[in-house]
Length: 251
Image (tube, rainbow, N blue to C red; front, side, top):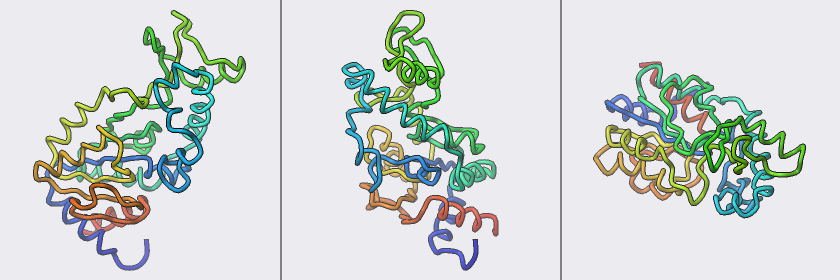
């Protein structure tokens, strides 16, 4: 990066250096630079598709339509590579500046970038499982069956319906208590690319702030928590995080 250090980078660096246990909370906005569409942005998925297509009831009512939608989502994810924002967070973890990443994303890009402590509260799309017996199958195999037959894939053991191993609308995220536990042990939350509208996951930064911790928000669009944040950064995730990393490296 060229030029002077942005003022927000100096403020964020000070907050991060003062923290003893900082965590990161990420949403779809961090992966848009990897060409994975977000949900609520101007070009988001919900501008093109009905959100009900990501629900459990839709999976049960129209499994073929459900797999048509998730085959498209899988294509976006499987082609994607980590971007500079993901890599910056991995470096911040390696430096000990942050302790872990809690993500709403299902794309595994944090792990691909080198982050070691990653909690995927909404699962990941790479694997699927039987809704009846739990048998696990690579999602790619399910998509091959769907495209070759035109029908939703069935479990080879019990003939139950197969679905991606992600949290659908109308389902509770199984790992949310683990996320809350990490939030309770943290004194700073760096929220990156999240609208902070999806609950209960969005309670993670709320918990940190409620117990006296600091909150940094990096997001292009306003969020419901901007008013209580210690620092709000309206910038691309990669630009903001690289500026923060550069400032930290200079000290």
